[in-house]
Length: 321
Image (tube, rainbow, N blue to C red; front, side, top):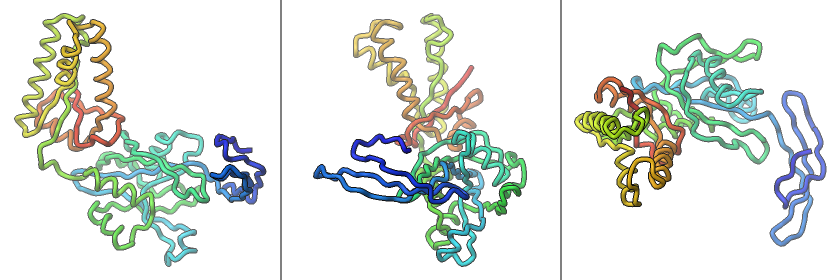
């Protein structure tokens, strides 16, 4: 029996209608209407587990990797050949979403990617299918190709790997050549967020580095760290972009709040939480940041922040001496 979490829903009966490929159930339940009365409803739900999908993109070539394979349900509903162009995807089975999509990516496309970025999750057909789909993006390069892809023979997968420009893929959405919902969502995400756009205008770049770490709160060492961060910021500025240090945000705020020195109550209450907030809020667009690394000098290392996409135009650089 399903776990009931909504007080306005009471599951009365579950019936298994089919348990062949996946599980089709008929659910009879009571639903409380807005006027307080209850009515009996029955719905069918198809449970095939949850899944994950990914769009591979190459910034230098401005291309994406998609697949093409036969899909029987589309063949039964107007798709004359049954062939469907879509992003790499697969069921989670007993693995987590990220582990699953890394496996599926290599099986279907042949690319062994390392860094994937989750952009969200969604119910794809909530009126009848229980599946939640996890959406990922990842950059690929030629040296990541570890095999031919094409899927697994034992799973009767016969997948064709396609590498096309993002511009062409978006045009294929417009003219109806691409009709798969998850693929359209991923392509539009790439377009909206400018993932394949060349950096041609000034960017707002956040530079983070060791402020107190390893200094023992020695003022001279802290000042040395700040000078080094400011030197990096100057190189970023001279490369034509607007640098920002987390310390430029936090230190004046703490002084205004009444902090008298490093490590006092106000400092501890504001400095580290503000740093964590910045890391959680800002998103890195890895490809664009690498352009800045080449201009900003050696010793810079890119790290990704698992934040919201609200500030995707702000890039996050981490440097080490």
